[in-house]
Image (cartoon, rainbow, N blue to C red; front, side):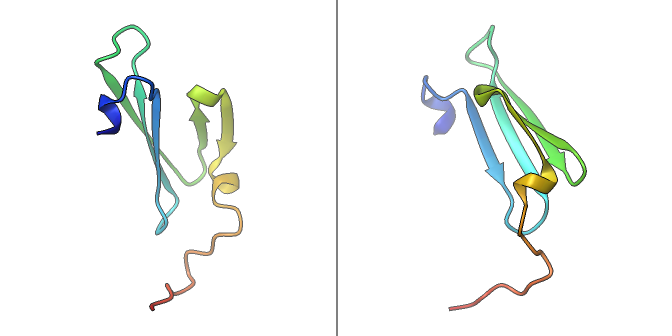
Length: 72
């Protein structure tokens, strides 16, 4: 549904379970085409629509994946 919105240029999915970020980017030359890229630990994430780059370490700052999830 997000890809159907003409004003969305980038969709970012950030995993809460592991250091893993997925990004779908609208192609600048062909707006009907989306490009997929993913990032893992040790890589630098490019948020092209914001002209920002962050290390995965910064994206997941203060996140401890070894802590158990709280159940309600």
